[in-house]
Amino acid sequence: MNPRIRTLGLVALLAVLLLGLGLPQPAAAAACTAVCYVDGTIGNDANDGDTAATAKKTIQAAVNQVTAGGQVIVAAGTYAQDVSVSKALTLTGAGPATTIIDPVNYVGISADNVTFEDIAISSGAHGARLSKSGSPLANTTFDNVHFKNNTNRGIDIVNLLHVTNLQVLNSLFEGNAAGIRMPSNATADGITIDNTTFQNQTGSGFYQANDNNVGWVKNLTVTGSTFTNLGTSGSGHAGVYAEEFSLSLIHI
Image (cartoon, rainbow, N blue to C red; front, side, top):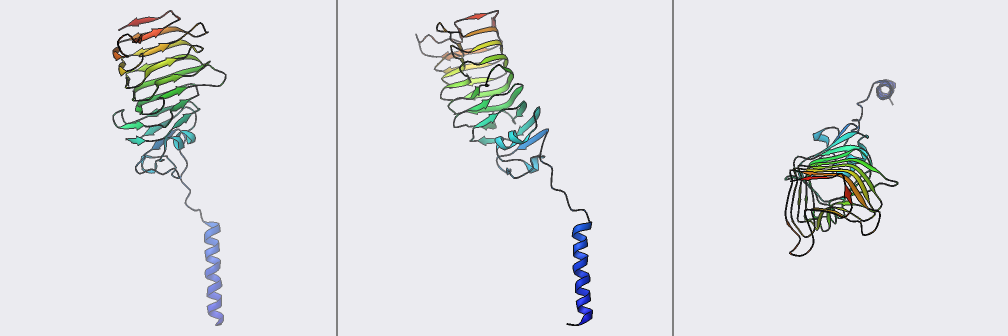
């Protein structure tokens, strides 16, 4: 080989090595932390989720990625997926007419300080299920959430759970078996239902059972809400049904 060609080849190789080792390379996009975006149409769970253009595809991927206290912003679309929320966060849709979670089972919430807003949860076994190991579950808010056509409950409170400061605001329950249901061994101190519609259901709007068990609800406040076409004639279902409650205000 011509010595000159060989020398030029070595120089070129050395230049490539130095370029790779010595110059800064483009940094990978940082994964979302305080705010994570979801878009079921253009998103990909391999994306960083940091902008609407680089959104995650599934809600669960964004929920897993966002830091506690952060926000998940979900674009319009139907998301046929269960979701499990085990950290404090706010989940925001583009409006309940356009952003719809369609779970097989339910949306599970097991952490304090969780807010769902501007979204619909429909056609699951339940809409949202509240649970927390060891109890209590505090500061759950649903604001402008539509719970529609869920086989059982719009909001299901599980056995033995103690709930504090549950707020259901500006929302809709329609076509579910029941709206909000507490079993006979769950307790609650502070449930607010305001400006919410319960209609066209086979069961009660709000239902709290005792059945000679330990269940009770205290500080239940229902204001500015409507209850129509709940249950069948003589079924015993009601807008608000409670077997053991105290310090409550119902003003419709």
